[in-house]
Image: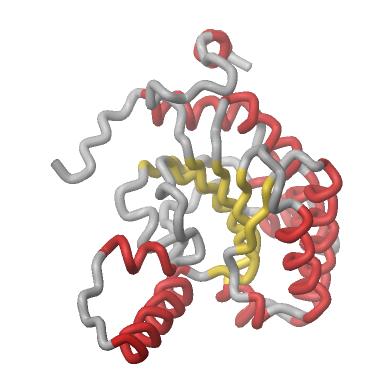
Length: 247
């Protein structure tokens, strides 16, 4: 870790982000696992996912140390499900099951599934539902697991929910607050900072509504190479930005 980052880290009060220098809600796009596997000449690209996802508990502990309250992880997109080979998807589902169960066993995180469970195999969907139930009373950091998540699908499902209520009640006023409450992250503050690894400069539809005013940080390393130093650099960059929220 370089001296600048070390000094920044030393000045962060643990479990205290009230001054706005630390994001309350951090969202991460865990990108570059397959490219990392190919770069490291691994025969099976799924090993990139396995190695990358194995570090999720450690990364969450770094976030805890900084005082971040909510972390949203995009682990598997709806586009992945549509476009990846079935063999690779089967391995991904197994890897997802393993990391979710490991997170439950820590008893440190309150887990929330924000993807479309109907798109997943019954076993993985069941693991996610069980994880949410088992951790519902945990008082620690809230972790949103974006498995089978797509921003457009999230918005469409929220629209369908609102329409159903409008038809049932006859109420036609639809406010921003009402709509936001129907999204998969309903009731949570929007992400302050979105990090994407792998050097891609786009959000690919991640949290389309929720991240409209988020700060974006693009990290050149692939997800399996993401370190605490990378996280601190992102948070430091966030702390130096002037968030105007459209004003």
